Length: 470
Ligand code: ADP
Ligand code: ASP
Ligand code: MG
Image (cartoon, rainbow, N blue to C red):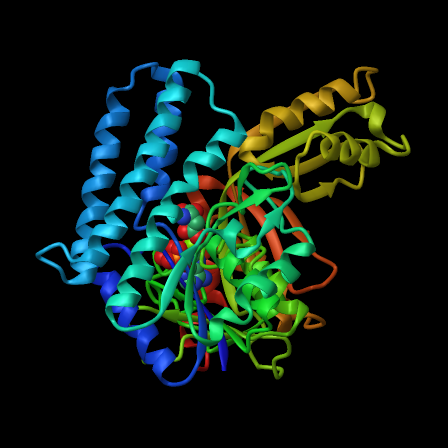
């Protein structure tokens, strides 16, 4: 079997964990499976890099940079020693340490540049944040060599991933698939390539990233490119669950889920999968397994194209917090043709993604939910486009969350919306805005941010997801 295995940040959180991961991969390869490994950055390295870059751009003081680089050097050197089991420096450890040091020098210089310029562009954010994965891949690859596998490391770019120029959310160009196949397709028969997740390069040769949590996406792109039989995503949870276990402690692991359900869940905030991670797998119908690194014997969740109809109407509840509501109103909008279309166009031109939309039947009001980081540009775009008075008021609210309930079994089943809103009413949760996709695989609605977790728990209870048949 040909597999791609991706390990998340917690799974490779330190040297001991990397050693554990190396043994897992070794057992899998020894069982006869050709394997490409994709790794995330160690622990929260990406957050640390982003935070350092932001501080550097505003403080103009390089002292913090020196401190953080020293911290990263210590954690990564320790990870090497623990993962390679070397109290004395073996030649393979020394080689990897050299590589890590040179990458740390590179990121330090870039951070100092940002500090003196006092400017942080989307392009430099991607360059800086790419270093987490660039540091991790040589270490995991070295750990695989110490357990006796042939392994070399690649950046996403070296593996063949070339993307659009959308820094922070880049998408693979079509030729990625043939390039990755060319570079890794045969190699995988004798080698275990370790590819840094999350990062790539665009056509004009600058570093891009695939969005936070993007290593899942890298794994799926590589899986589709090499025609993998399965893509395994190793995480710190038992699989895809009926809700975030941090919010709902009684959440259960779903043994199977369809591609579309998994996509909708991640779209509505279930951080367990990158929202685009399933798309490349769908191209070739490749099953995706989500497994727990720390309980490798458990089955985890299998994400597949078609699933037999289950009795469960609703499978999962998720919440997305980084959103804002915009209300556009004005009596002049009543009967005025094309207002919604103009709003869509203005927002599309400003690069704003609309997550939800609803229009009151009086037509005097349109509500939209957008990413909170796009709020200012969204409001500005609508203001500029409607200078002529049709729109009287544009208000916004950042203190909202969107809840999504997902399950393909709800298509055509009457009463799901009724049960949902009754349960919320009983829990004294006010629904600010509602939308149901025409696919009927989800119902989503906005509530006040400080009630979002209560809403998730109320719905988990209402649909008895803690008793879901496993
Ligand atoms: P990775 O280790 O691959 O980076 P993530 O940290 O991105 O994994 O995703 C796992 C996290 O997603 C969990 O720690 C959990 O808190 C969160 N999560 C949110 N919703 C769900 C869900 N429905 N099922 C499982 N985990 C979820
Ligand atoms: N390291 C990146 C992040 O923290 C990508 C990933 O972990 O998948 O977002
Ligand atoms: Mg992740």
